Length: 95
Image (tube, rainbow, N blue to C red; front, side, top):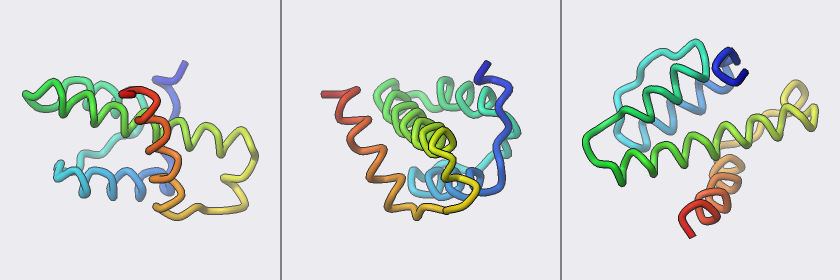
């Protein structure tokens, strides 16, 4: 179950960058479930909340894809790689 997946140091660094980019104060998350719950209940604007969720789901999808390709242990992608993965994902979600 995705709620029990731990957040590693590499992912935390990237998440901190995303939170900083979105002007959201950082909170420590040990599990993906806590991160998703925070994003689903963050802020008062439904549109901003959906955008944040789309960005985080896209980011988590990139991590999952990388893990399944057995790349995460031997190669670290830059932030621009993640942005390149997230943009098509959010375009697909929001049309």
